[in-house]
Image (cartoon, rainbow over all chains, first blue to last red; front, side):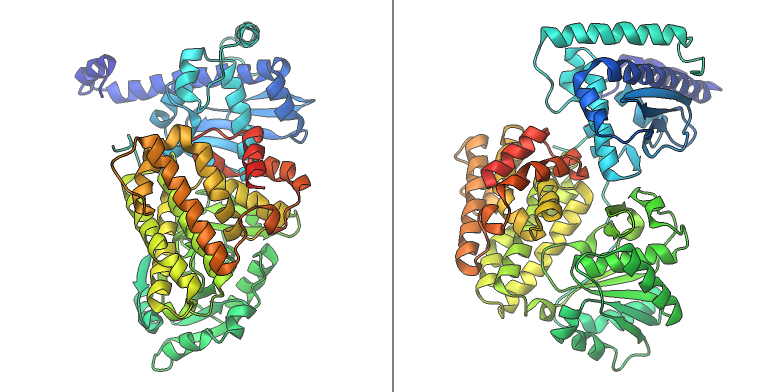
Amino acid sequence: METALGKGFRKFRGLPWTLKLCSWGKYRYLDFLLSVLAAAFEAASVRVPELREELASWEEGRTFALGVLPKGPAITLVREDGRVRYLGKGLRSPRVSFLFKNLDAALPVFSGLMGSHHAVAESRILVNGSISGAMELSRALISVETHLFPGFILKRILKRPPPFDIRRLILRGKVWGAVAGILVRRGFGRKTPP
Amino acid sequence: MLPAYYQFYCPVKILSGDNALGYIPFEMTLLGVSRAMVVTDRGVAGAGLLSFLEAAFADSDRRIGHVFDEVPVDSSNRVANGLADLFRERKCDCFIAVGGGSAIDTAKGAAIVLSGETNDLLDLQGAERIRKDLTPLIVVPTTAGTGSEATRVAVIFNEENNVKMSFVSDKLYPRVAVLDPRMTLTMPPRITASTGMDALTHAVEAYLSVQKNPLSDAFALLAVDLVRRFLVRAAEDGRDREARFAMANAALFGGIAFSNSMVGVVHALAHAAGAVGHVPHGTANALLLPWGMEHNLGVSAKPMAELSFHLGGASGFLDPREQAESAISLVRNLLLKLNRVSGIPLRLRDAGVGEDLLPAIAQTAINDGTILYNPGEVTYEDALGILQKAF
């Protein structure tokens, strides 16, 4: 079903540079969302017990990445001292990576409109690396999403959304605060982490 | 009705019926190859099944370059590398895998090595990482269950790192699958029952999967119909050619279905039960299937209700949940009948699994990729709960 926004865009499709402009906009939007996700991974890995428990079984120095093929935005992170550290943009020899096949395939997932299991079902994602590593990353990602997105989005993207819990709400607030702090320090994704 | 988006791919040419083996040399001509490396195991060779294949080449200008009959129970990178060396040495140009999943996966592993894309198979594990076309592979299954003759997957054990490597790629589809009823006539009742239940599990899980689509659904339902009508017959009387042939086709259809919509929690647990508790794959699938269906009942009542009719249930008078529950009962009844005919275990404890192993099986299962495709969420606690019920 076409949205009102889509109908609006359709009118401009014939104009020169429209497609390139759209593609540039999607790239920038996803680049920013990935920066938010990187910050959320870092923040949640310190504060969320389920994620800490998951990370405890990962080997030290495991690198993982999320990104878009063929030349789309990407982020690489590493598990260090039981927490996650953002290494920077691009694919930096990750051991496990989730790569979306194109910008359009990634947009609904990173915008909180589609769950990762739904994206897998629609063959939007390529998984590189060991399957067990990918499953561990998938669980970690769900844990981060659970503390990043509000309940009404979680109902749409998770197979079993968590029940309302005041402690989780407080924890989510703390994660949001930490994410905001990280984003400000990094110039909203423009600066590379030290 | 239709999913918002789906993909379906099955490039395998299927030769199915009496004397299907006889057409292999002609298919080799079409593929532009002339010397085949036959890959099989000692059991198949010892049962004399290769004589049917050799007879097919008697009046042909195509040749069998070499017969490699040392495939182990679990295909490994060492065996795949050795097979690739032998393939070059004997100047072969295609593989004919005769046997079950291990023979087929060994041939696929050797084909990956021969493609020259990497020196280390570990580099290519994962999904869609193989980009080069592989040496043509013709598959002759001797069991009716794995569906490997029509799948895009290979699982190869890495002996150095002690891990099972999974390869998923469209390049891994065999070029030809040959279903000849003569090749499964000697299967004993218990293996007939467990491999047949494997085929049913492929079909049921493919039909319930989050990746289900109209084409995979059609193949899954065909497989369920055939299993319902012919599995008990094949287990009761191994010489029943009609039942054997039907089951070979059921396995193929199940394979096509799950290769395009994947499987779910039952397979995740069965893979783990095999790795941790050494339970044969078909047996594990058989005894876990009703419990896995029960776990998904809350989120998959409608497709499960649709399955009920194909499993032999009455249709149209129950609400979807009741109809779905009847589908689970019908699977349980089928398993009971097979237990009487073949002695296939009904519970994990009967399959030699100790209760102390259940946590390790559950932990391994949640790292299995098939969990992603299961309609319901599966946490460690869920997996352990299903195992405890099946114990």
